[in-house]
Length: 406
Ligand code: AMP
Ligand code: MG
Image 1: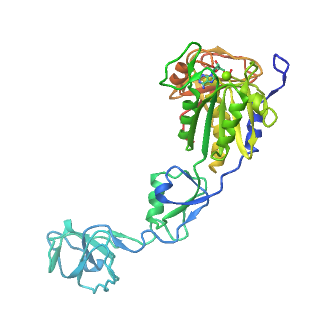
Image 2 (image 1 turned 180 degrees about the vertical axis):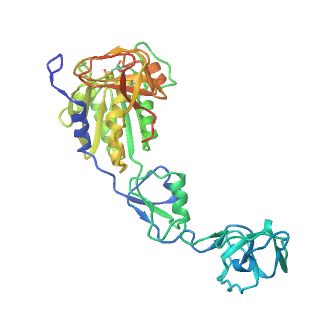
Image 3 (image 1 turned 90 degrees about the vertical axis):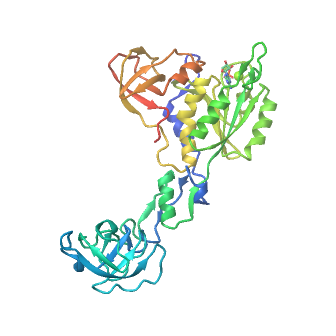
């Protein structure tokens, strides 16, 4: 496909395929559970122990032979001698003789021979002799060894993002450490001689650097460690020096700005021999660059904040998720009803900032890729296929939900 100025353009999916062909999961590392929250499991974890590890009581009460208490009621209670007490953590438990009861606490091992636990509430709580007013069924209030997880059962599978519940399961099953993909280290560099750090006053012609905060935050939200280098002036030498400095600490580098057709397109000037640069058939976000430098994937995104953010969601995020060893790397698309019509350029995949709620979506704000206010008001992108030139109110469209976990 040729663009207006005669350069060939790359379809979005081809560019993504080029990127995914160049990245692989980071080598696995074994970390303590305390460091594993939010990381991705590198290999299936199978339980070496049953959970519960032994038969134990679900209630505070009395362990009994169930047949001894069958028929117990308030009117005709059953009396049993209490032969001892078993607390949580007790070892070496004697067999329970028929016709006797033993006091037992929640979590304490059930003595051999006992077939049910009578909760305190059904008794007179006697210390030497207990009066039982209601009969449990066989097995009642006994938590069986292995009823939750058996030895050999899968605890978590490779690709799982470890959340509190997974970590609780691993801990409960006795796993102190887990093999995960380390958090990818992402370095973010803004380029542009006009850029100033947020919080600093602006001189004439200057603007605040929005992209490095936007992109570093997006990388963190995706589970990476992000280092924000700040901004580099439009001088190829200075840019290359910064890039070189960062290579050793980065699993992935994202730059923004300096990749279009301007006179000071520093990134392109500095890296044109080493990376692919070209136009991708999308709007916004057309000028892109990608390649590896010393084995580190480098994304050179366009400078307009909306274009940079969108490019992150479409191209950087799948690479990041591949480094993490995740199975699903590309944003899923969901159907939604569009409540407002709009036009779209033929031959380009259009990504329209939109507000989505409960199956309904509407474009927000204007077209300009500099419109940070509109971007912040959006929570979705309407993805308009290359061949579609018009979306009418009421049409079903495909929507990418920007904050969706997937
Ligand atoms: P460029 O691709 O470098 O020509 O940048 C395109 C547009 O995006 C220009 O208006 C830049 O001033 C603006 N821009 C570039 N980088 C940033 C940034 N880090 N934060 C906000 N705007 C930027
Ligand atoms: Mg620039």
